[in-house]
Length: 260
Image (cartoon, rainbow, N blue to C red; front, side, top):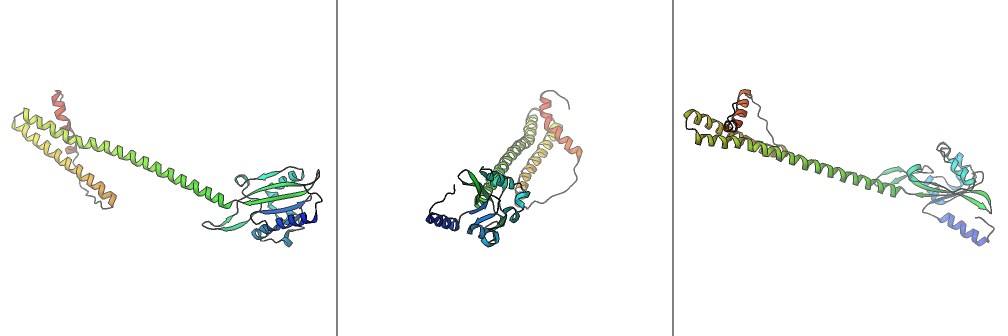
């Protein structure tokens, strides 16, 4: 509330207004003509006191009307207090500043628009603007760090799942030729015919070679990781692949008197 105080109080108030250096403050009359404009605003906007005082606020900053902010000032002239948040309004007055680590950036602001009263009568408005750019950038960096940490966690979980799937597949692939070797070894012990012995030895040798190739494949995975993999391209006999599959299951089938 503005009342007729002492001259010393007016001088002290004027000094506070001019020397306030951590936020912007300006005063308008009831026609929204700028009457006071502090040094913080002069430094940040590049518009000195002489360039602003005595001129209509909405003429100085027509974008206030374009953005609907003029309604906030009409509310203030009606006796209401209005708050502008950075989250919803970004800024009150367009100010570009150089910010370390971010280059030139639009100043993020919060603002408070209040009526100036003389008793019960509204005689103008006072606006306080606070620069919250550092806080906004810090919050953005924190969100980016959290997002990066979450992505790293997901990648680690995916890698762990792939490792588990690989080990499960590897376990199966290792047992398959071993089962054939063990099965045909038992057949050798129970069947003494030369034909059975010859075939059994062929199967054992083939599956031992398969086991060796599997070990080589594991070594190839290490080479893939180190970027040293070499591909050997050759023709493959489908008949041999099919016969190998039959040989793997043949001992178990024979034990159950099943013909393949």
